Length: 288
Image (cartoon, rainbow, N blue to C red; front, side, top):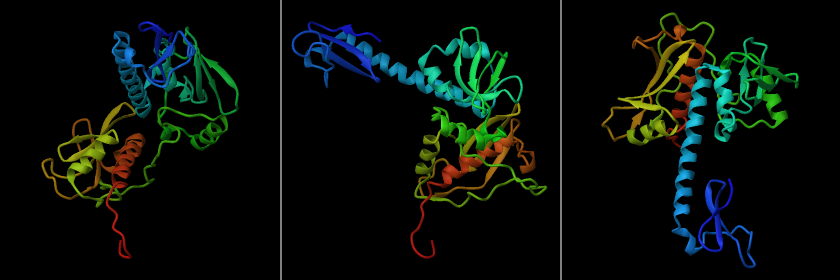
């Protein structure tokens, strides 16, 4: 954005998310100052820019959250919508370099640009820039990408950095033949924490929801809503606690057998359980 007048001899602007000032006269004319001069700090334009900076921060976070939801659920997004939000730097920085899929599975590549008319420009695994105009575009969850390892290697060659964790997201694959009646994963149970409050705080800091005595993660998998949950302790208990088993329920609250859990719901549930378990208290010593 441009520089705005803020009293005699100074101009202000947002620079990298913060209000900066520069002098318009004297030896320092045109030079950005290290801090805001006293006579500028209370100027109305400074307060206005601070509020704008706060709004932009919230807007960026909202864009990341929305695109993360599209990706985790592999939702088809109208190409026209992507074209409308693309000029917005916050949206563009989140969408650029995500792996997208057009109408056909072989129409897969890293999104690099979108025209006003809704034409997508992306780089495929052959290193070619292709142009597509599908009605919708999908941002697939990485567990659904058959060429995931190749995409990771190619991303490293391109220097791709994704704002939304997609190709480098930790993934888990459902075992080929889980027990017929199995409904729980015990791999991440027994993680001990000094307090239930601390474990609940870790849950929310990782972006998951606390519902009653559980950490939960809701996912849409192939159009079906599924919720993964891990026991973290009684809601009003402030003493030591341990993580429980990992389970999944459908949208009607029915406990799912492991063989009924979809690939995305499985991967995201395991990701949540592993992330919670990683923060456990680890005892030192030969018997730890």
